[in-house]
Image 1 (cartoon, rainbow over the protein chains, first blue to last red):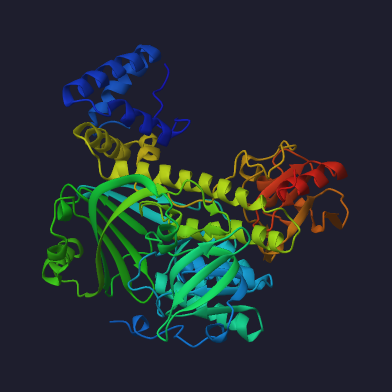
Image 2: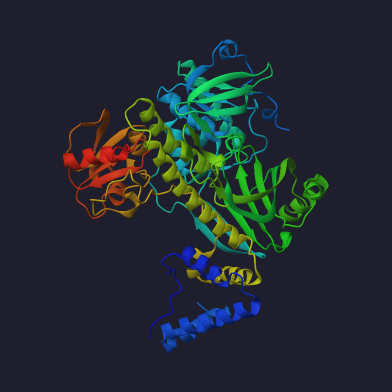
Length: 67
Length: 536
């Protein structure tokens, strides 16, 4: 089973973060939340692998039993 | 209060220029005796260019102000004969910690690699740096170098002409006129020169206030940069702790926009904030308190005819990342060798436009970096705060999120990508030494590479043949012949060869790479010399 990548993997983390903030620029909270929801689904589809997605869901919960 | 602030470092003295019937013409006049102006003056005087520095004051800057000086700045200071006192007086550091709420989430090391003569950073109060630079000016004067500083000489008016500038200067003994072939305006963010010439200075204003306090205390915090997001002692805001020489600690507390500045600056309001941060029982003394806001902006171009802007007068950034004074000193590093060639008639005036282009590129990089840091440190919307906090929460447990944590991307030299002075890359070599980049240091047994590259065009050959000298258009490049065997740690190979078997680098006097290829080809390097001096 493929493992979720938890080491740095961005081509350019700062560029990505700046683009992400720019995407939200000027949106109210409801629209921002909706945008984030769509983004999660887009990225999840790209990953596809059920095992990796399941690890990602757990990781986002920040539970202490994660490695 | 520290006596250094009260003693004149360059007291007013009457100059013979004040008693002449017609104004005296100097090669270069520098306006402003801060770190940038003094650095420029020392660089020019070392090259034999006559230079006069005018400053409306006669003392070091008040308070610590700029404190973090980068490896690149120290490399430049080495070339100017000031690197040792800076490294010796300063507090060396390369590590930092990031805290979120009440816990440490992340640690970093800026220099995981070894093999550099200088540390990643030293912390040094601006007044100490200015004192070191003035000492260097005095030493140059003792050697007969053509350099002087005139205290309490305030420029009141500037007349610009095709081949010179004319200044009206106010002194305690009345005004006088003086002229210069070239003027370097390093007179700070509020540059009177820029104002008198009616030039633009546009950018983004950040609506936030930060309290800077320098405290003297005996504390056993390590020499590291500690940064807090949303700590219990400054809820919803940020904080920074940094060590300076003489047991002085820099504390930087974000206060928010809607505050009463005068009230916040009073000791009775500052001290409780510091106690909340440092602990009730820590003994400390306040040395300096200031409240600042900031802007990120730059002039459209840094050369206006015979007037060259350098440092804060040309560009301003947020303080996160130590990109203010460091970039100003790098401006002078870029400018002075070009100005020398133009003054000597060995390069066209157009070469000075490359100063503007290359340093505008650097300023834009600095503004982008420090703006992004500011956006991370002080989120401007509920969503950007949620994302920021998510990054911090994840970074505590997962390494992948740490590159997203941005408490300041610390000053690194700009690679002049696409510069008209650089030749196309003709070596399958490492990215860090591509044309336009600042040469990284490398160990050579008991010595280091960078001091051997200082202040002249160098043809660095690594396991390659080339003539000892290459002269093109009256400008000479001198060979420095090295082999990968000269560095048993193999950093020279890693940084300059990569997978290549041999390399030849043409290196500019400011230690930036102009061209590189695997073997010597005379025509290619002659063309590279012409390009690097604005002739092609």
